[in-house]
Image (cartoon, rainbow, N blue to C red; front, side):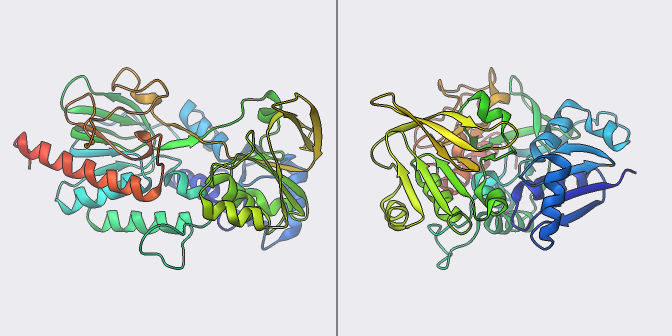
Length: 400
């Protein structure tokens, strides 16, 4: 078995996801906490040329970060790197209800379906926990008057779902067949024939789409301030976006940054008033209004941003060393194309006032269906709806 080394830090959800995947494969990970041992941060940068965690080594081979580990798993190459044999495909198990995706919607569906004695199976995904795994502080979810971090909340949600009998599998769904019942739902290792399915796959962060951005990801470009902000302590940073997520990222980064530049393409923010007020009042945050990113500057690491005024076309350079992208999300529904009715962006279409999709027996909830609200509390509410809709539908089919 190869020695697996991971540079990590507390509160890094990407680190947790990578460890969960390797643990599922029976691997032991040696962690190097770059906050507890600051000198190891320099070692990590020297070995990898990267400023983001996690950084993973299998033996002497540098894998990269969590996303690259995930890509190796999806491509089927990871088992070869680990020196383990690929298991033969299992015969599908039968389940009354399969939930695809975790996060507030999926876990709430699991809680309700579990309490209804439906023995739900949940494909939580390798990127389990949804967008809240990248959220530093949740202050607007009822029942947490002092606030709670996103990862802590998702841990509580999962424990509650498991308490009522939800079986949680840390695997991505790679194939579905909704053309006949029971429905096939399959991942890399597990396959199920489900009487009913709940889709709760959420949404993922959207990138700018620039070549320079892609080239400098993990080298100063990130979509997770919680994970990577502390690595740029004392440096100038930028946040791209104008919504609540962007303001939350900017405020969090002021703990570490010498200055945070918020680049927004309009002359006013889209964020909620309380988040606007906090950001506008923070002396470490400056706003670059009516501007779009033209290029991320730097050869090996980020050295700045080139921004363009959307009115005049004038360009100017902002010297900085880290860029955090917070410009919205796109639904994680690619596996359902051709299986469910989707809108032009990719959100699953549901009947108004319900969670019913275009396929009888398949229900959907959370951010995979919601381009408007995208809040943890609304996702949880629709997860409840989906479980109740599925329970009643199963009962109508004579499946208790």
